[in-house]
Length: 262
Ligand SMILES: Nc1ncnc2c1ncn2[C@@H]1O[C@H](COP(=O)(O)OP(=O)(O)OP(=O)(O)O)[C@@H](O)[C@H]1O
Ligand SMILES: [Mg+2]
Image (tube, rainbow, N blue to C red; front, side):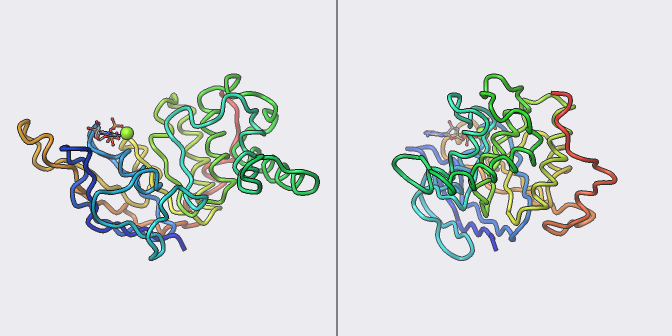
């Protein structure tokens, strides 16, 4: 289970109301795309879901329980850029979350425990198409490869909810199409709910089970600071795709995931 329930959520920064009375029920295993004009509060909404910031009013429940005060391993995140650690190798980046969890202070594991995490990290690196790059540093990877690495880093923690903030925005179209195929496959295989911010409607309709638009409904200049954005449209994809539906990724159509072309 990983259902999100957002009830009458408000977020204000000083005098500025960014989000106004946002309510949405997201079913377990849904893939929700969030679209909306620049500056309307999409990233702010994701930060609230992540627990990185607190709402001014309202509540967010994960499987019926209010979110803990801090981000936790049940929620993973991939930002548009720079979410990997430049001083760690690909393998080190993917292992880090597990190492931190196992030993909060030293971030080191030893012996069999370390080998188990390493095996799991190598499998995850292979799943995102980065086999052979385990010992490289992020600066030696292309943009598409760095985003695959960021996905592997989030997914190894088996998050219930994966939050994606324009994760593929900076990639060129060929690599984007490839990473879309990968994303569908990963979502199909892992029992997680995905909330993804995107500027690209085509991407939204390619990946999501539901497309939700944020807008500031009363967007007059003199009111700009006084009214926040809220959900103005909520579009279920037709034909309806069930969350996590197997047919979403078809190896015959979508092909094997490869890392060529990077
Ligand atoms: N920490 C903060 N302190 C004050 N204001 C903030 C803070 N974070 C965001 N804002 C303001 O909240 C509004 C929404 O910002 P946000 O980054 O959520 O928009 P967005 O929809 O993600 O935009 P974009 O599509 O450009 O990424 C902006 O006006 C921004 O200036
Ligand atoms: Mg943003």
